[in-house]
Each structure stands twice: as structure tokens, then as C-alpha cells.
Image (cartoon, rainbow, N blue to C red; front, side):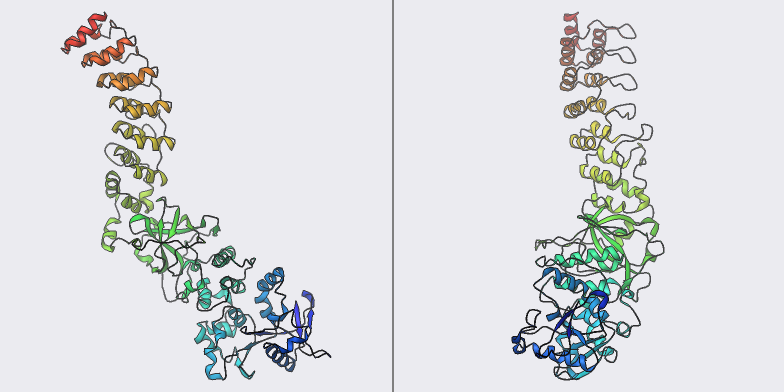
Length: 613
């Protein structure tokens, strides 16, 4: 550490002395606002220094220090070699400690002619002077003529009024850690720095963190500061800010905390004890999430409240961007809300591990005509979320109402029932959505933990429902999620459902996915039976091309040609005959396909079979 000797040398100059950390003597320190022609480290040893405008301030500081018995003083302008980026970075990271370790700090108010204008000094508006006010045990204020105005102790009331910093800080009654992150940020909210990055760097000591200096990073410096704070402090008030800036969960300037001076930590007894984790995606933590509107709009309940708030923690508006209850972005960033925990059934909204998306370095441009998401009216929300809403959830899934389903599934009790049968048909919510071809709903339910497959005895398969109803895209979604093509549902397989109902594209999709053409239902019918019986020629052709067994037998010893003949499907009978089906095959009752065509009065089929006999 470099210190300035308070006595001039024989040559009439002030000297800089370098000290090792364990050899630093008692010293005073100067706090001031920079003016023109400040004396730098390079100037101090040169004769021209005496001609610089800032030299008189330096001389007066040394005189005061010497008169008070200090052999050394520290002045930032000349005790730091600012041409060295490494030294500058070290000094800024150590600045709070320099002031804290000083025996006395002289706050020179160059724009204050008398005590009457004390509170109007620009010294109280600068970012760097915040730590210079708080860190030293003793701060002595001087006017423009270096006449003493008083000390931090004697002037604490006036200082508190113009800075909104509690007097207990100045008296030493309370330490910095007594105050929340939001409160400390609010003290800097109205202060200015010449460089944008210094809005962050001047607060390093206030929060007891260190980080490298990267001039040119602009607002990202303040984001990095908050990330460092999260590594040493789990204080949710860090997120309790208001700003029109929409760059993420972290504020981009101390100004965002201007109204956060009364926000303190509040940790419920059942709050999870898990630390913040910061990744490139965002901030990972556990919070209670209460759905309140469309588009995944919710309130995230923070562990902080206003000083006078009893059991009414602060909440922020967030949006579930993927409707997965995993990744959220902050919205309506100009607002904070209180929530009365007595109005909530907390068991329905347990803490969840979520990610609040990180700030973007570039400001996001929001179209002028784009409105912020709006909460549902309170009465509607209360009715929707009342105690037993299984029916509401079932109906919302069936109708494809994404917003309502997402909202209801923010309740833990309903979410826990996701994979249980929900209706008389033994369908899960996923099967219900698949049956109706609600692709977005299927994706939502899968994201929320719906099982893509079910136990054969517990309900209807979502893939089977989609195959039965002909929802090709739904089938693709389910297969991409790993749906089992060989899951039985009501004695049937997805391929059989698709073949029975003539959904050629789905049959092809399932075959390409490895579906077994020989799979049978309870009556031992294969997919070829289903298509032949229902007259789906294209599906029959496709199955034959894929090697389906043309002579497979069902429970009554019939082959597919029996069913095609019985129902009069001439084209399919011809197709099967051309593929080698036995025209004179006999079933359990020793009857042939021609017999069944005759019974059904399908003359053309009878003639065709007779011609091939």
C-alpha cells in the first residue's frame, strides 16, 4: 500500500512511500469528488505538481493530517498508479478495506460554503463516496475552506435524512450485514458515477465481494456484481426491484432499487435450505409459484417483505416460458406485489426448484402494441382454484385449454394425480389430450411429468388413442418421447387401432417405428384382419408389403379373406387372392370365404371367389 507523507521533503515536495501489508502505519484518508487537474501518481514527484489546481486540496489534507498527529495519509488520486490495470483493479477491490482501516477520514465538500448547505453537496450524490461514508469509524467533514463542519456521529441525523441510510449505521449500532441486499442497493440508487461500470465496482465493499474489472462491459458489471453477491448471500431481496428494463431476473442498475429501502429478509419456518446456483441459463433456486393468469403468468413468492409487513412476503410476476414449471422469466418488472400467506393453502403450492432466466446483455425490444400479461380477475381465479377441481382440469384438457390446464397444475394436489385415470373410460389426462389431437396440450402434459406409457391394466394408452382417432402429429410427438408401440390397450395395440380405422399414414408411421404386424387382439386378429374387415384397401396393401401373414388365423380359425368376403369388400378379396390367400380355406365351422359371401349376398365377391376356386 502506498501512503503520502504529510510533511514536505527538504525539496518542498510530498513523497509517496510503499509499505508491505504487515508494516502499514496509522494513516488518515481523504474522501472527495474529483475536480480538474487532480495530482496523479505520475505528477506527485514532479515540480509542476504545485501548479496544478488539485495540489491545494492535497496540501490542505496533509496539513490537517499532520495537525492531528498522522505522519501519513492516503489520497486515491496520487496513491494509485492508474496506468497499471492490475494495480487499479487491486485498489478498487481493496478500497472499502482502505477506508475501514484508516484512523480518520476527511470528507472534503468542495461545494459547501457553510453548514447550511451541507446536505446539498454533490458529495452525497456520488457512487464512490457511499463506501467512504460507511467504512471508516471516524469521518470528519470539511467545507470548501477546510473548516470543520462536524463528524459522522454529530451529523448523523442530517446525513441519514439526505441519504436514507439509517443512523444506526453511522453510530455503529448496526453493521452492514444487518441490512438486506435490497436496502443496501437502495442507498446507491440515486448516486452517480462517471463510468457505468463503476455503479457496480463502487459497491464491492458494501457487499463484501471481489471481482475483476472489465471497463467496457457497461451494465453487465452490475449483473456480475449480483452474481457474486449470490455466491456469499442467499437474500431474496436481491430480486425485489422495479424497473422498465426487461433483461432478466437481475437488475441492470442500482436505480432499480430506489423504492426498496424498506424491504427486509423474511424466511418462513418451512423454507427450503438450498443455496442459489448461477448458470449461463439463469438463477436456480426453490420458490413457491402461484399461477394467476394466462400465458403461464404466475407470482413467485420471495423470502423478503416490507419492514412493516406481517406474513406478507414480496412477490414478483414471472412467466413460465415453456409451460413446464421449470424455467421462468420475470415480467411486469415495474411491479412488486404483497401476498398474504394466510390466504393460501401452502400445501398446494410447495417450494419448487426452478430457474429464473438470467439477464440479457442487450436490452430486449418490446413491440409498442404488446401488452404485459394480465392476471385473471380475482373472483374468477378464486372459483377456478377452489378445493376440488379435478372436473375442471379434465374438461380443460379435453377442450385443449392450455392456460387453464397450466394454471390448475400449479397446484401440487392436482399435479400429483397427473398419471391416474380421470374418467369412466379409464383415461389419463395425456390419453384424453391425445384422443382429441390437442398437440400443444400433449406437449404440456409431457413437460409436466405425464408418463408417455401406462401399465396395461391401469388405463388407456395415449398412443393408442391418437392412433385410433387418426391424429398423426400426436402419434409423432408420443413416439419421439419414447412411447411403446407394443403397449396393449383394451386388448388392442396402436397398430391395430390405426388399421381398424383406416389411418394409412399412422399405420406406416408405426410400421417404420417397428410395430409388429403379427400382434393380435383378444380374438387373435392381426392388423390385416382389422383392415380387411373394415374395407381399408390401402392399409391392407401396405400391411401385405410389410410382410403381414396372409394366412394368420383368429379365434374362430378364420383368415383375413374370410372377413373381407363376409363384408363384401371385393377389391380387398382380389388383393388378398393376388397375394396368395387360400380361396378354399375352412374356418372353425368348416365353412369357406365363399360361404360367408353368399350369406351376405355379395354376388360380385361370390363370383370372384368361384372363379379362383
